[in-house]
Structures are given as C-alpha cells and as structure tokens.
Length: 95
Image 1 (tube, one colour):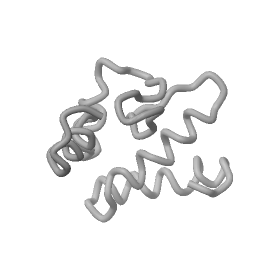
Image 2 (cartoon, one colour; image 1 turned 180 degrees about the vertical axis):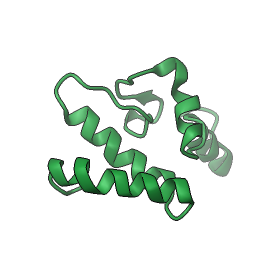
Image 3 (tube, rainbow, N blue to C red; image 1 turned 90 degrees about the vertical axis):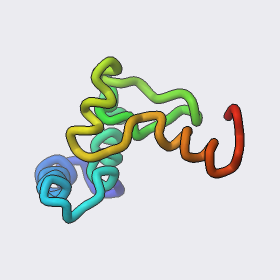
Image 4 (cartoon, helix red, strand yellow; image 1 turned 45 degrees about the horizontal axis):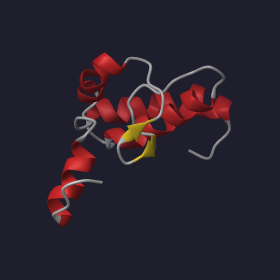
C-alpha cells in the first residue's frame, strides 16, 4: 500500500491478483491497495468496498449493486461480514 503508483499498477497488483487466484494470497491483500489506489485517483470510486468512512458507511463504490458479487469473485466475504462478526463477537446490537 505504500509503494509508488506506477509500481503498484504495473507490478504489484497483477502479481497479487495472480497469487489470489492461485490461493497463495488472501484476497484483502490485493483488494485493499487496489481500492486505495482507485479512491486516490481523481474522480474514482473503490471496487471491492474495503475502505470505510465509518463502520457502517463505505466510501464511494464503482458498482454498489454488484459489490458482494465482485467481492465473491476474488474470495472476499460479503461486505457486511466484518460488522456482523464484530457484533457477534462482542454481543453488540448496533455500531
């Protein structure tokens, strides 16, 4: 996540995606830097919904209606899984 834009686009993201598809890398290791890159690009929105304004509010998305499908395509859990897990783990009804 802390490399220059050119290296991220040309080298790291394609390599990470290859590793995700082969099962050698967790999907969030690929999706998070891609989303950060997209959000930092002028006028762009994130693809996988890894960046949040708050626990219940995602930053802008490319395709919100297909978000869970996009996440599933690389092995990420559905977008509200982290919130659900936190609530279950700590017995919290609302966050």
